[in-house]
Image (cartoon, rainbow, N blue to C red; front, side):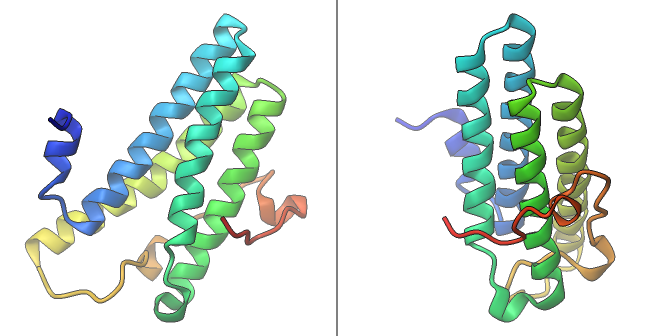
Length: 154
């Protein structure tokens, strides 16, 4: 017997599944904020680990061979957000977690737009890669600026 969430995702498109993963990252980051508010480092670390696991999963499934520049932009976004989340966790900073949530939410909203575009014009797609018009913006403290690696393997 599967959960409601599993049942809902059964008929989901690939883009819908990506959006669901972004929603999971956001949910775990809010759980990390709640743990910070309670002063519970163990819960904070567990929530952060779950969010980072999703990011690693997304990074590992990028099709760099066919995704081109959009796939590279997503790879850089994942590296940046990974570093931001680590920094937020290490400093137990609610504001840094909230900044990371805002970044993830912006890219998730772009994926939602892609999902709506696919629904209204269902042309077959061979790869899921973020359209070039949806390139992520990197703010201060990004992995690109901090010298953090822009690529890792899971």
